[in-house]
Image (cartoon, rainbow, N blue to C red; front, side, top):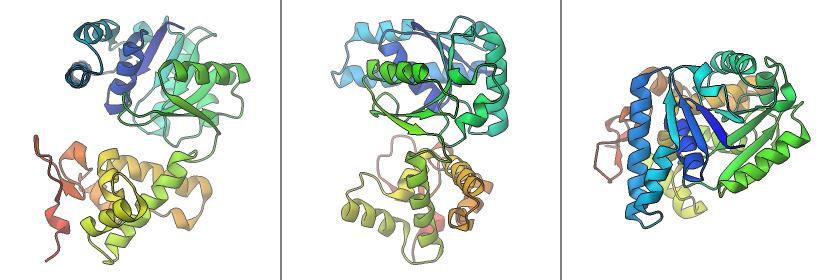
Length: 297
């Protein structure tokens, strides 16, 4: 399996492409937008520079990695020869079902189709394909080049052979794969997102401020990052989408998204990606500054 196609060139997609390319795979990075692809390649180049500066790779390894990535706006051209396709598009059921239906028509019957979805049912995604046994979840963590975990999700019909292949492939990427079964949020987000949602409720109900909540979890629970800062890092829109999947999937009020999270997303305050969430973010500023709306007087 030498040829890898990655669908979607956003934060996760360009990180996945970077990681495969750095480990010697030929990568086709596909996105509908030429501008998005250009930004993705700039991001990959910048992240490789950081690795060079830290002495993790040399300049030749950087050049080899970049040479291993080709970009496409045509999904047919980008995916036609893939041994594995990793979908990393927006966390939206309709978009993913449409993509997998297309991929099932475009790709060889031997191609493994993987989704980087963080919460959506692999079984549901597989249902629109010709060969559900070839569909699996391959949930990378952000930032992909650095984070070791790959959550490997078996759908109801995912074959043992495909699962073994993806587990082995993940190890080739110097990752640690963990096999889990298909359920809303899988393991990572079934545990993480209710915690983040509860932290937002704690702020919403006036129990403590942004910094206080994050400090308690960092110092008291040894978390490297507080839950509100982490929510900003993930993207508040992504958090809301995952919490809604949990709420719908389990039909349980305990997964009701906090109204404050809903309001922030509606207002376009999405965290780092928009420049403001629970904290504000400016280019080059390493200091964490609470957003004005949450500053305590």
